Image (cartoon, rainbow, N blue to C red; front, side):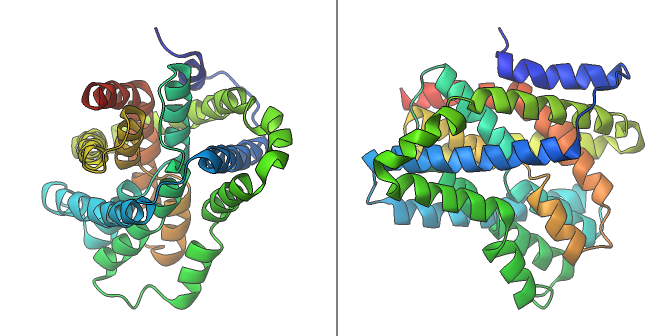
Length: 309
C-alpha cells in the first residue's frame, strides 16, 4: 500500500499528464520549502537535546568525504559513457553529489509513519552534503580552482538559504530548551500535511519534465536511475560502517541516492551559465526524484531494516 503523503506526488504527476490546471502560486511553493527546511532543522535540534553523540565529529568528516566522492563517481560515467562535454558532465555530477531536502523529508515521513527510529543529528548531515559536490563539480567542469572565488563561497556556503535555515533551526531546537515545545504544533505536527502539499507541486513539476524525456538520450534516463542506486548503496555501506541504526542506515542511503534540484541549479546558473540547465533538471527532477520517491526510498528503508536488525 502506498503512503498517503507519497500519493500526493502521484496525484501531481497524473494531473500534469492529463493537462489539468491546478493553481499553485510560486509564493506558496517557496513558503512550503521554507517550512520544510525549518521543520527538519527544529525536529533535529529537539531530538538532539536528549542525545548528543561524541562521535559526531568523526561522522561529519566521513559524510563530507562521502559528498566529495559522489560527483567523482558520476563524472566519468557522464563523460565516457554519456559522451558529455566537461561543462555539462561537471554540472550534472554536482547535482548527484548534493542532496534533495524533499527526498530526505519523504524518507523521514515514511520512517516516522513506520515507527522506525533514526539518529537525531541527520539534519546536520543534510547540510554538510549541500556544498562539497558543488565545489567538486565546478573543478571538474573547469579543470581548476579559479572558478571558485570568495564571493561564490560566501554566497553558497555562508548565505545559502537551505544551509542557513536548517543549521539555524537545528541550533534553535537544540538550545531553546522547553520553549521550543510551543513551536511543535506548527512545525512538527503539521509536517506531513505540508509535505503532502509540497509533493503535489513536485508531482506537477516532475510531470512537466517527463514530457521532455523524448528529447533526451536513453543514457540520461539510465544514468538518472543507475546513479541513485550506486549512491544509495554507497550510503548504505557508510551507514553500516558508522554503526547507525536501521533508520539511520536508510537515511544515509537516501542522502546518497538523492539529487539536488534547488541549491545546485542556482549555483550552476551563476558559475556555469554555459551548462545545459534543462538536461540537469530533467535528470534530477524528472527522473531521479520520482524514482526515489516511488521506489528508491522504500527500497533503502527496507534494506536499512534488514542490515540494522
